[in-house]
Amino acid sequence: VLIMKRCTYSLLLALIFLSLLAVQSNAWVRSPAGTFATLPDGATNPAGITVDSAGNVYVSTFAVGGTTSGVGQIFVFKPSGRLLRQVDVEGSSTLLLELAFHPTTGALLVIDFGGKQVLNVDPDTGESTVFTTIPGGEDAGPNVLTFDSEGNVYISDSFQGTIWRTGENGGDPEEWVVDLILTTSGAPPFGANGLAFNNDESALFVANTGNDTVVKIPVENDGTAGDPEVFVNSINGADGLIIDEQDNLWIAANQADEIVVLDPSGRVIAKLGDFDGIDPRGAPKGLLFPASIVRRGNIIYVTNLSLDLRLFGLAQPVDAQWAAEVTTHSIAKINAHIPPVSGLNP
Image 1: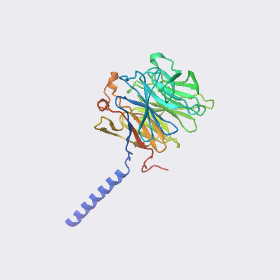
Image 2: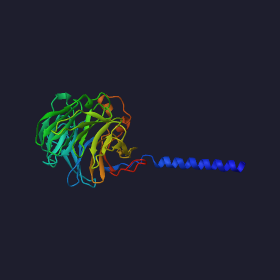
Image 3: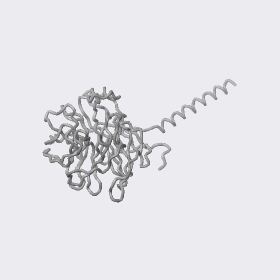
Image 4: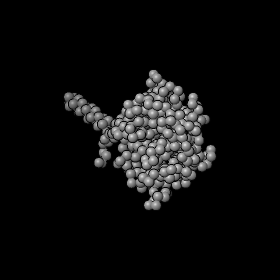
């Protein structure tokens, strides 16, 4: 009887061990975030990111403490991660956010948050002209831009709860949609932020950072905006947002230091990357306050904004002390492969 009890106990332990292995195999598999490039000494917080047709990576900086040039800066990296050049943006403030190449005109458009404007910038010389100015004075908060298939430009306004629209050549913007759902009283204190159209352009998706939501705005047949609604909740600091060929949403969660991937129904199917401390050079390892994302082939590039929000008089978020330790700023990269999830129907 004693032998049987021992055998039964051993069998029970073995079953528990196998069940734990099964649970582990069904957990999230996080593709690690490596380092693509580091900004040169003296460069400040990388914010926006885009890629040109040759695969060169352009990064704008949100220099809270200013820059030695007195204007905003863009750093251009070769696909290998080697620094190609620094571009000082003429006529800009030091607070640059998103940037992107216009799909039909080829113009490099840059959000100048401090100047409440979008600039058309020469990517080699930094010479610029005003593409559009966002109304509202100090209440304006231009943050991210995107394009539709007709070349119209859409600009998120984090403070006024507005998505502005211009034609491909800029000029005075129109209010495409204004809604309280695009504002926030949360933290970080940015409402409408990252934005992207799905593939058939039936909807524009907008990250609301302070509310931890993604908002879905239907697009009517005549191009006007339908009624915005919350698509998903609980993405901690939803920031940069892109949509892939399968209409999956890739969202930078700047307060969770991860990339969250949703399928078209809003179900989470991957969580990629994580924060792994500060390296000996003072650069983030992995993701730290990831802000903007762009995809080139099988690689996702991510700016580590590493912003200490206490500098703005805000209450301490969980990553503030780590951000304060950063002395070398970095761009992360993650494999764009979505790991399999147990139980996910094909």
